[in-house]
Length: 184
Image (tube, rainbow, N blue to C red; front, side):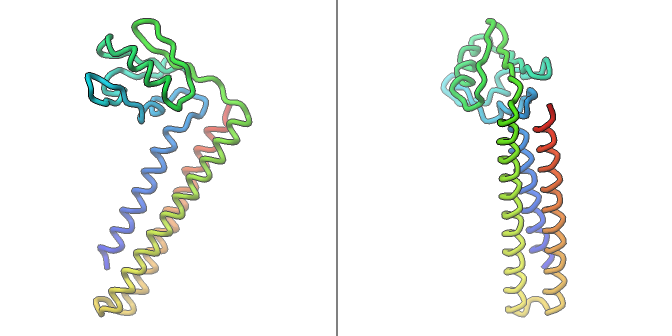
């Protein structure tokens, strides 16, 4: 029974971690190096993440600097950024690529907040699915006489508490991200 509860908790924590990593990629008007996480550059025939090819730093509130370790890869990095869905034109000075993030409009901020809310709701659904699966496993164990009726009730109660804890955490993360997006 404890392994079922532990597995459910681990699964719910993975949902939280995934949500946080998705939120980190959302552009909130400020420069954030994690917007480049999904970008890969063809480096001598191998798709390589930008972070492995260059030093990425925030130089100003709305500016990212990308300084490649190998100057010959500068053009490839620039091309990867242009063909991506970031929506920012890179500025190449021959040594460093700069990404200047424009301030977000009110409409764009509201659109991002909607996406943030949707991702949070999707995560809550996944957490509730984990609860359902764990309770089904406990009921199966009860049916096979592996646990008692009291164990089943205790297990269901613990899983419900975990579910409540993780949905509350999702709400907190969501509210913090929405506040960050709406801040000017």
